[in-house]
Length: 155
Image (cartoon, rainbow, N blue to C red; front, side):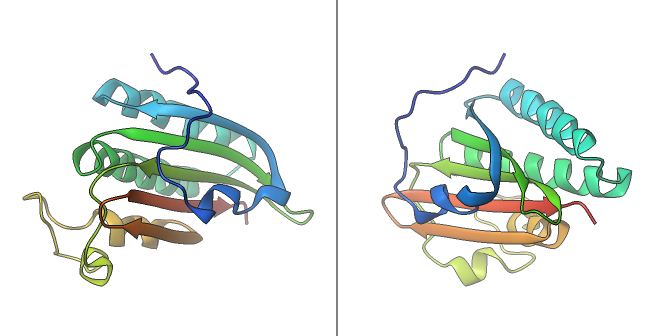
């Protein structure tokens, strides 16, 4: 079961404040195990349904969330995700910020390229996730950690 985390910050990143003015709700969840990933997928789907995302967009967002959560576990050694409900006055959205205090990504350009992997997978995680969402930002510093922000807006 997933529990709310404390306010301790794993990795200081400006992405923590991105979309702050549009945030109507935020819950912070731990990412320590596969069970946490399953719980996150459920909560992301519930948020997507609540803002009436299409089934296709729900699936894209849940898929991106799953990929990024698994990266947080595998490469970052676990971390947390901030699940945001967003409203900018014109549209509603769901934002996810994955944060870890892992080793960071040394070569970000390569990591975003399809086929690049350091873990023996297909190398579609970051680049594939980027294609599934409307907004994608990453902040990674070797030796400090990684933060990945994704947003899906209702069309």
